Image 1: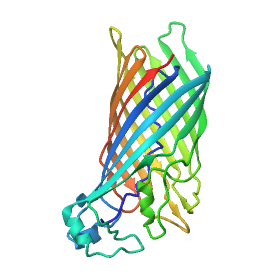
Image 2: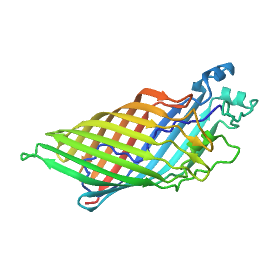
Image 3: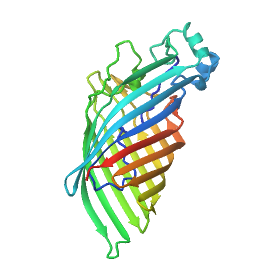
Image 4: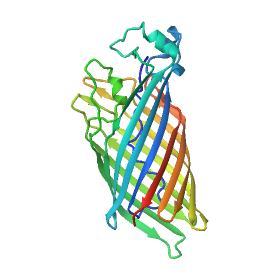
Length: 312
């Protein structure tokens, strides 16, 4: 196979979207699906081989256990533990060419002997603490707003090591990163009658792992507007929004990898359903603007689904 993904703008697996159960202790599962197309090999090189980026694909799947807990009234703790399944593959034509192509150390052409390869396992868990800075509501209760801010840590428990002769880009397919990373986060929620606004900003500060590799620092921002509908005991929250993700370049031993990092803006459409203590959510996110450094596999869309239960 020619190349592998070096797009690294996906935030940890902790989804900080719409959450009317923000004051409750909850436990649940979320599923993320992200298909990619392309490779870090340049289009000119691919064309000379009779190939195009459509001959290469990737699929990233995360199953995330998430817990939200309030040890005291104004302190919110979030724990996320992902199970990661990363698969990459290529067309039969690409495989036929790959069998007679040599791998170059500069990463221009990368050969794989099989049509698909899967890396899976426990990813890096995250623990995040938010403190409620303010929670205001007017006398009628029709308008309210609140702000939470805090910090957290991403722990290097996922499998991350690669062999010395492997391409550095292969690290993007491993479930873990091998580094202890710091998270800074802020969440704003505002509501007027049945219409609400949810804004999240998160910044991840990456460190260097023990193989002298550093994933780029990451910024994630999103703005979601929702409407609340009540159908007997069921509450519906259709929502629309914009998501922005930016990643710095990756560092490998003594140099920055030019085919890594960049930014992507997504449109977001979702629906959250709440029935008593049970909640279901689904969202579809489509990239509308991409500015990636160099040649990289590009995300086609993202699907997030989930189920959670409010303990109290």
